[in-house]
Structures are given as C-alpha cells and as structure tokens.
Image (cartoon, rainbow, N blue to C red; front, side, top):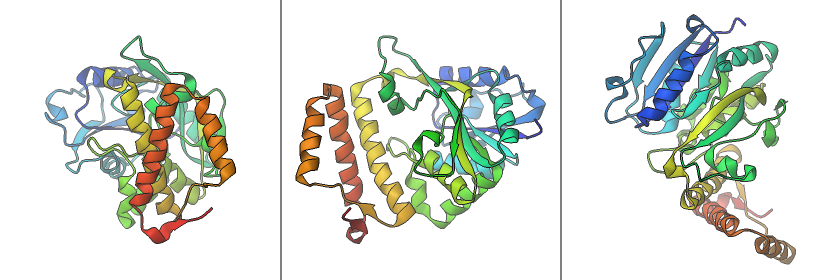
Length: 309
C-alpha cells in the first residue's frame, strides 16, 4: 500500500451534525493520517465552514473556498488542489467504515487497470419510520454491492461507481477537469443549489474508460449514507427521478451529439400499459416523473440532435 490518498469533501451549507459524523469517521481511519490528506471544499456556504470546523487534529488538512456554486465546481477545485495519486470523494453525509481508505489503497495497488471505483452504500434514514425497498434505494444515492465487478464498457452499469466514496486516480481526475474546461456543458451534470441535475459521477467514470482505464465496484468498500428527513418523502423521490431522467438525456447528448426518441409503436404502448397496471402508486408517480424529466431534457436540446431509433 504505497499510494498517497487525498480525501476531498465538497460541501455547500452542510448539516453540522452530519458533517461531524463524517469527520469523526475520518479521524478513526485505520490508515495513518500521515498517509493521506484532507481537503474540505467550501462551496459558498453561509456561514463559512472554516468558522465552525476544526481540522487541527490532521497533519495535512485544509479548507478552501469555491465561490462558483455547484457540486462539479467544488469537485474541480478539489481535483486541482489535490496532488495525490488517488482522490477519494466523500460527501458531507458519508460516514466511511474504519478501513475504507486502507481498502481503497489496496484496490489501487491490486487493480492498476481501473481508474475509478466505489463500493457498498448503506442508507441510514433520519426518519426511522421511512425506508425504501432495495430496488428504489438508488433514489437516495445508495446501492448494495455484494461482489466485485469491473469493466471498461460504459454500458455495463453494474460496474459504474457512484459519487459517495468514489475513488479516482489522479490522471483521470485531471483529464476530467480538462474536459470540463473544453466543454462547459458537462458542468451542468450535477447539483447546483436547488437544481436537481445529476450525472457527474458517471461522467468521471466514463472519462476514465475513454483514457483506457476501467471502472468498478467492490464490497469491501463500505460507507453509511445519512439520509436526512428532507429526503424521506415521496415528493422528494419524484423530483429526484425527474432530475435523473432529464440529466440522462443531457449526458447522452454531450457524449454522442444525438438522442434517440423513445419508441411509440403499438406493441410498446401495450407493454407500457400492462407494466403501468402492475405498479404501486409510488412507482406510477416515479414512472410519470421519469417520462416528464426525459421529455423536458429533449425540449432543451437542438431539434436536429433528436433521432428515431
């Protein structure tokens, strides 16, 4: 385990109680603090994070300010500032298992052909009465990983890492920043204030594939994802679903220059109706939100970029 790790925490007006748990988990890492650095990117928080967060316990920690609002902008600042071989993205509601950084370093050494990876993301709901079936946990940024998977195929979604605890080799991070500078549209693939757009995590992984490195998920990487009460509602899930669908259209357009229109033949309409009848009320709301989000994304694109399947 010779890799140097840089932990980057992008944060915009974080909940102090959640952030305190994130920092406490980092303090308890089995990998000695001398082996990794800690960078908190304050993305225009009010009050400034430096006014309440004490990182004096760490020998190589800093808080930097990024005034341009947006998760992608905060990540870019972290990637540019970190000089480490491996960057680990930790959101301000991610509580890492004690051996997370140690396991990340082991994977970096054992799988030199993989450029990005993440792991098992377990939800911890603030409202104890609220929970989601496993098939819907992705709507709160969680996933169950039971086996190691890796691929360099961008269409192999099971091996695509997610942002919480995402590990990124420095070469991939810097190439990603370069492409963001070359095509500013890519900056719209993540949260900006209250606007729900997504896809930055996937974009990073795809950039890694494009430069010849794979992507993967590993069950030994474990973290607890704190789900606040504001995210424990059907209305929130509907908004997230619409945002993901809209963002998926935008990402496809950025990557390929065109977007396929959804099929609308009689057979597909019948199948859609049968599937709809078998859905729960929540699933019907989510299905409608997904279609509306995708339609919104298509309306935002140039007409000539839309094509028939």
